[in-house]
Length: 400
Image (tube, rainbow, N blue to C red; front, side):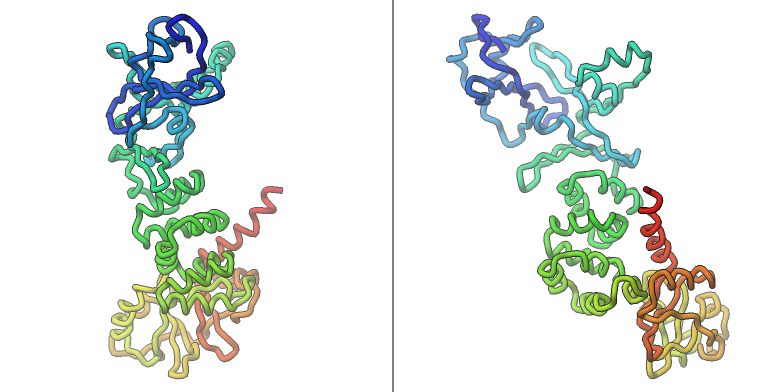
């Protein structure tokens, strides 16, 4: 940048705009002056005619621009930031800006999220032209971007157009987006959902990222999310945290949920007990078919999925299994022990995970009950958990 006499006074480092305007004008430029000190120069002192930026007055006569609460810097706060494109279920990076001259000022019109914008910014656009590579520009209107400030005074950018509503996506799709965002942005997304949906999202996130997110989320919110997660997933996660962190979260959780997790944490990770869930549909073998339906209405609030209905004796031992279909078509007054299958395929709580997977695959089960040495039902291992476990063990081999 030059002063009014043509003397070089520094380098233009950034531009300042108001984030609350639909199409904001550049209010000031940030000059990196002598001794590497940054000075905010109001636009009114800028002579924007010609190819160089210069002052229209003496440098000593400038009154510095004070940034307001809604002001942001384009380079620091906008360039390279990520936008959640919910319609495309992916992350878009801001590579360049689209500005337009208006009455002696420059107005921000939109952001460029294309590869072409990134190459132009790096000065490599001519190379693609010489190679005859046809790259398309992809602009997002600035008025469709919502700028919010976190409690740490960090600016967050997200698309605010209604069709990009994050809540329309499946938790697995949201998890894919969360995996690509920074931890702070991911926490912001999780905090925007109720505890149940946040739990569904977190269950789909890799364990490494789960740990990072749980460290950053408010402890009470984290405990509430763990309350809503399936016990097996919550146990896997909390077992990876530090002892102090896990104890703190267990204390903040609902007593009943915390009790279940503490039981599961006692089992070795590589056993059936280590991967089972305690959310299981189990009823007394003496119940009539019509009574089972009423009982299931209570159980369904807690059970992950009602694949099978397990029968228990008065002593709590596993005596049989049936399906929801069999219950619905049975004589309403017929007790369960008269139409259940008494030959139950089960696994021991200490059985190795791979043996459990083989049992599920061999007998084409949707879930297998887990019992102790006294034949007491302790939980179930579902087929989806078995598949997840198998895929996680195959992943390192596939990457070799």
